[in-house]
Length: 325
Image (tube, rainbow, N blue to C red):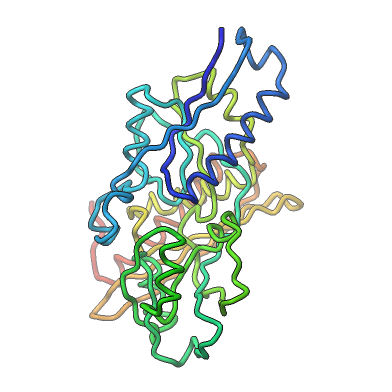
């Protein structure tokens, strides 16, 4: 019996690069597996299905105004309706509160987690002193800029990578913020630009691809699981668990970065939160670590939960909010 794996994805250039990457990994693993993994299938094929999301259709509003899962929910719905079998997501876009029927089954190796501030090479800008109009659509980036780079003023910037770079070229902005991972995956050269890695923690799971499946689909899950990079997986689980416990969605001014040391078997996690108290932005930072095996995902999630709770309690304490009984 033949098996055709239908892969749901957005149709943007970056999404397609990520999906093609996953598709090639799938084909390679399928080819390498013996009949035990393939079951009774004589043939396994893949098919890519493009799906437009709310975030793709509306390029003018702030992402926060479009709701939760603006780049994922239509794709996830297609899995629930059995129109697709797996989904390829930029994992930072996947809500931490999600469908009970779906799961992030596999996370391939992570790309860069950095945020870059980019400006044209013919412009001399002092990132720490000059008044600079910066393009971004991220609440997190805007909040961290206000704290760490108060001279940078945010102006809404939406669109794909090519659109954003074009707007920078046309000088609609002095500089723009881009995720280094997307630039690397698209092979975008920055030789004609100046850039600096911003001093801020990334969004939880930034730079990582999440491959989602239906929990009940045993055959598909066995195949997709072969693509999992345990080190990346436990890191992003810790980051996303911290955000989930704190209670913010993927647009919250919340940064997190976990690093697993494969030599010492230590998972370290740092989280930053920005919130407003008495009319001023406040930055709170927490960090911790745990000894664990690279595939001990429960310990990774527990570490994230502990830091998420610490941040929430700290925020409530500063705001004078009493804990509920």
